[in-house]
Length: 161
Image 1 (cartoon, rainbow, N blue to C red):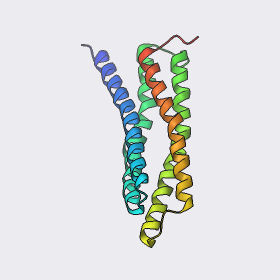
Image 2: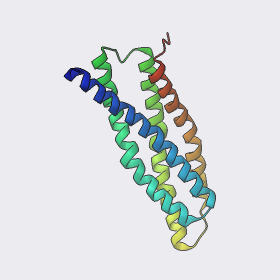
Image 3: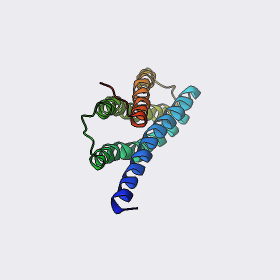
């Protein structure tokens, strides 16, 4: 195996791991936040949301940075253009996902803070928390669908037009 082939496999490996982290962390965060929310307990929600915010920064944010770098490197190594239709659509979906992810990060911080405040005061969760949760939940569907579509595009590499 040549050095170029080894480098290609390493970059591809990093890209695949990054994609798995994005999908897995997103699904895991959604699962744990949903289960915490269903308890209705501010202390449970505060604890889970605290961990979710940390996980989003450590795992999701790292993968968000690595994916475009490794993707551009792969396209250059393979001699592909970023304007190749399936790549261009993937990039568009990636940006679309980011447009949902950034507000979700803020919502998670805010829901965490509202749950901590309710826990510390011995109050039920405020209406603001429930509104944020509804938006957070709704934002998850298009973002998850876009990531799933990116996975399909990366695997199938279809001729789109």
